Length: 269
Ligand SMILES: Cc1ncc(C[n+]2csc(CCOP(=O)(O)OP(=O)(O)O)c2C)c(N)n1
Image (cartoon, rainbow, N blue to C red; front, top):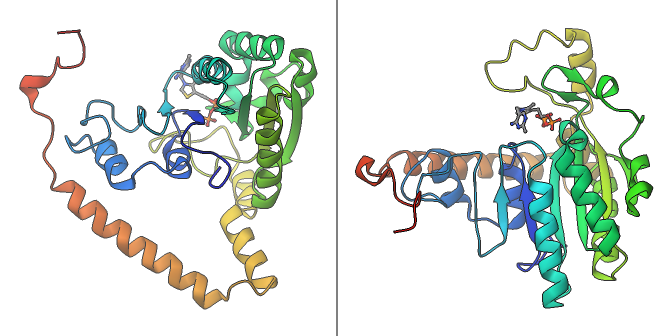
């Protein structure tokens, strides 16, 4: 998304929103402080990690599965009214595509030819439910024509395939060609949440799939094309993890919101 989206484009994310916030350019310290529910956070510590908002950058997230798509639809309609050539992106998981909100929003986007881009991170599991058991169609991309949308399925663990598909969808949106669905195939390398025993997937499956780690793949590609050396990439990784460790230590000592303000922002004063 970096390099394709501007400040005017909206991005509505999910319960797994941190990387999308980074891609939209959200300030990382304010984001980390929100994750740790500090008063210095994006939302003053009231939202927590699942509810990161940055209205200046038109970035939002929701823990309600599928609910970001109608919000993005609203942004896409707003862009139409303002005629500012902006697009709106909703990121969802494969579990979200069978919700009513997803279908309703896609239908309206198709009917009005709105610049809505839905990036589906199809990691093949919605908690313990395999995608194959919950979908009437083999792929999500093949549903796109029923909403007059453009649909494509890509290897979501291949950075370049995702970049190409995303760039194409943004161009279509800005050119008034209507909505797009990008189904990016990936895999959830860990449990649904940190305490998940994850017994519904075999160890063999998990180990086999882990071999497709996208970070290792893009590193190998960069080295193979002589765009970077292994030592340079290790150096970048080390310097980022050092700066993240420093940021984390500093965020941890920030103040928490005052309990006396617990009802602030709940009602209109
Ligand atoms: C409307 C709604 N129903 C149920 C839940 C509980 N829930 C949280 S995450 C999740 C699974 C979502 O699966 P998917 O969309 O594939 O995303 P993933 O977690 O695999 O990234 C469910 C059912 C919820 N948050 N919202």
